[in-house]
Image 1 (cartoon, rainbow, N blue to C red):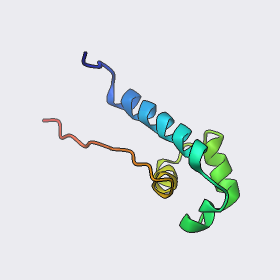
Image 2 (cartoon, helix red, strand yellow; image 1 turned 180 degrees about the vertical axis):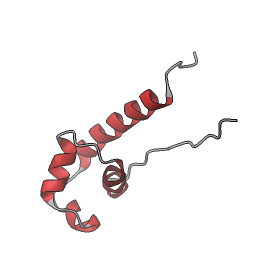
Image 3 (spheres, rainbow, N blue to C red; image 1 turned 45 degrees about the vertical axis):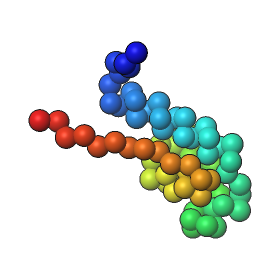
Length: 73
């Protein structure tokens, strides 16, 4: 069955799933690996939307968000 949801809804679904997975795996010592403060990491976990930082955090945790880019004609 094909999903019929908008691109933004799909992105937010994937973003929220990735955020939950990062929350499970992230450790305080991981902050040093990407050069962010613990306070910035905690803001991410409290819902501040920063997809680039989340992607960096996910990479440290061994996770990846597959962002397909399609050209619409």
